[in-house]
Image (cartoon, rainbow, N blue to C red; front, side):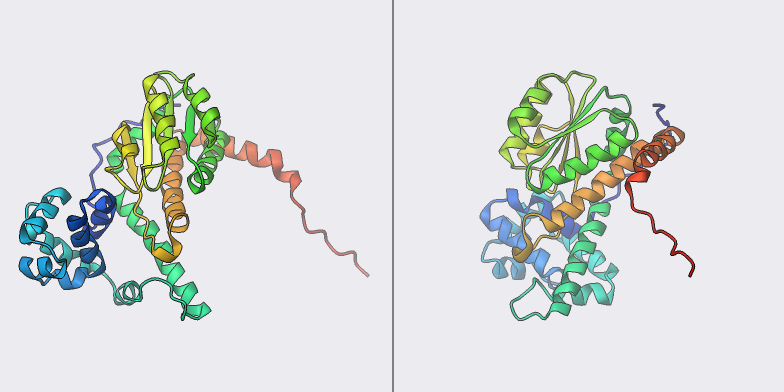
Length: 305
């Protein structure tokens, strides 16, 4: 496949609360309380003093300053500006939906549908904002010249891996989706410097997926992580990290929001690869579509009376 050469791609900064959610799992307890309070009360915090925030989180002003540094902002004033900017960009409908919180036992079915739709839609939108375009472009370029692509993930992430494998296979790329650790380790042991391996894990702490990627890295393969946690062990061993921003809640933790966010990244990655060799990709998709066309039931015309 031919590679495209273009202008440098701009890096788009994700909303500050999306960045905070991405690091929560790796913060010390006191700083995590600060982060959780900000995510849940971003509008309030935008107008709070540092001492007020520290008191609300039962911690010290020093801890709030340390949290800001951990987040990568210069200080609390910059954090407030970022929060105010994000709050100001929200629509009234978004604000109402976000304030409604998680699904409760008293919600009627209409409210459940509304909350699920909002949370899932926000996971997709936030992921698009969090996704690094330069990192995505770098992964696309590596896939275009790879001899094969291994995709590792377990549970719901394994399902996403199968989706990516099917997409790549349909445009003629040699790819394998593996969730069994024995099969994955055996496959990873055959990879080379020409290979690409993609590990998918929402938390970035799934030991099986980490071990799969580590084995592939030992053999020189380019390692890509798709994860909601850019500071996770999975991300640390990757050459490239594609970050999701799933809005998971206690009632729906684990599979729903994370899966949709991961599928968003997978779609962007696949289309980036396919578009880079547009004519061949369209031809391959049409060929594979025609191969299964007669496996669908077609509506028969009713005989005239």
